[in-house]
Image 1 (cartoon, rainbow, N blue to C red):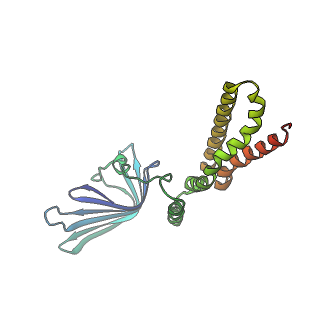
Image 2: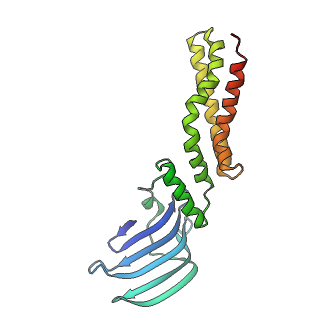
Image 3: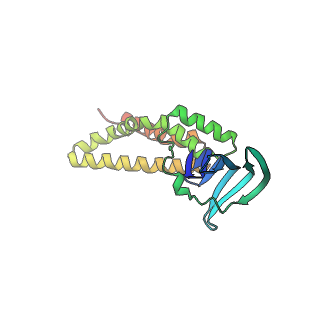
Length: 212
């Protein structure tokens, strides 16, 4: 919930800071002298259109209130309200990202968004990465051991360079799979776990080929 001004409060179920999209947005306008609600605006979806610039509201209604009684009620499929002047940056200050959520919080968040018809593929990738990410050190270490045997004879600097190179390759591959998952080209679980599986399998294979 955001108090946008002395006479307007925003309440919403979800805000996507990357796409500047609201889900289940309610805007309450009230008289600052009496704090009585004078109008409520509701939209199932609201997105920022920079060419206007302004918010485009979809599938909603407005309700005017005076003296505790509804004086006007209007529905709309799509509309814009110039008086909603708060820009997306205003709502991004306290947004909790997927990295800041626990796996339980993120799973519940995804479930709510899916019920609302929103695209949850990128968030599903991040949920799977919360379980695959802790294995990064083990996987990189596993594939680095065989290289350390061969590089160890050439000096410490060579070993360090090899370790850095392996880490760079891993993060490059991991970022590539993550991007493919976000675009829906791979299932979220495959996108999150493939780097660990590929590098882990490669590490085991190289380790078995090391001569005693």
